[in-house]
Length: 354
Image: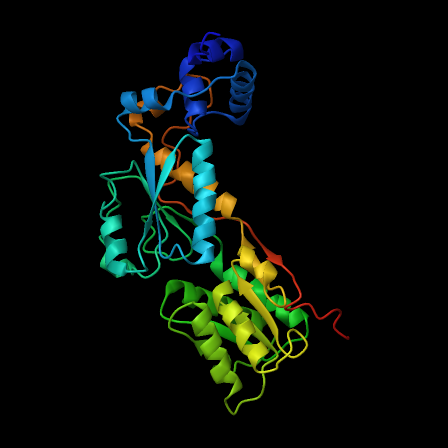
């Protein structure tokens, strides 16, 4: 059976070869109707991309790098899996790097430390402050993942961190909770944003701020969550009626500390986390959590990365009349992807009496 060429697909769809190439490579300079028409022809004819030939023509490696803080942490492992799945559908291989949350490693990556092996970089930064980097945009394809920002000059994809935290706390307030612990404040941008969301929800509900309810930790780990909650329970203050943990790892540690102290969840203390990692469905009790749409984060970040990887001449040669939009893209977009609240037994108390 003869190999299906782009020219065959173009004739079948009634478009130019350039348009077929733009669709196959995932470029954005094609109208939705034209893209759908080309995709139908690709499917009907059984077209398969020759990735080796594409790499030889373009000078690209076919690899991108994904740098995350900790592969042992479930959230980052699940994010990596989402990126690898989405990249695989595009014929891209992902090289995964762990930064250990080291700001110096993150800085080297932003300065091009992985570009010798990859065509572009997705970086989930954790500690690098904006003051540590040059103001100029990077001279290689780079997209930031997550809520930690190191400057608006870098395209970034994540959830609205403040709104997500506010949603979690509003849920606890709806359950009748008022003495709500914010577990996880630290010096990070993530910690600042989630503290802000907590305070917004509490203020909107006219709940008086109590400083001891905002509990700092060094790192967002199970151990830190356990130790912080044990110390809280052993203190002189009253028992809180809820804990908003800034991630699921902290929430898992909090659940263990509550159980070890004979505190019932959710009857005595309700618990909510953020990340909705797979583990959270199997804790005791199952953990209510904010679930970011990891597939949406992966897809959108890869699209932004591929748009940067696209050579200028490829955009310029889009066939006339086919909804070319070269030059219309906004520089360094800061995009928020969907999230949802997954309610489980750790916070569900039933209807609150009026």
